[in-house]
Length: 171
Image (cartoon, rainbow, N blue to C red; front, side, top):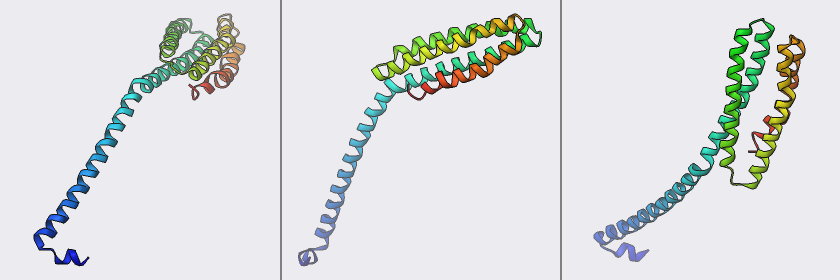
């Protein structure tokens, strides 16, 4: 360290400034490199995952909406409100169509075979849910409200949770 003490003040300031400038350039280079990497990852995420997650979220919402409308339909019929039940039925049919469109939209975005398998399972379980619950709507139309409500609310809820909702996390 004696050599540093022997330097003139101008040389000491120059050397210290040079070291600081070198460190500044190194930190800036590392920061730019990290920012470029993050930008690439963000673009990749934006192209693949974000639209897929948005489509899945819309599909889940449509499926839940359909289930809620089934319950409302049975309740309206049990209250003797045929006109209100018909409006709910029309809305329910629209919700079912939206769910079908959601299934088609999401399926186009799947690129991973594991996700495809999980999606196929979800679609199968959605159809199983509908097969188990949709006939209950006919029961309500024939005035068998208790049985219809039991199938839509209790059995339908179990089917929906056990068969459909468990796949939301997978896909």
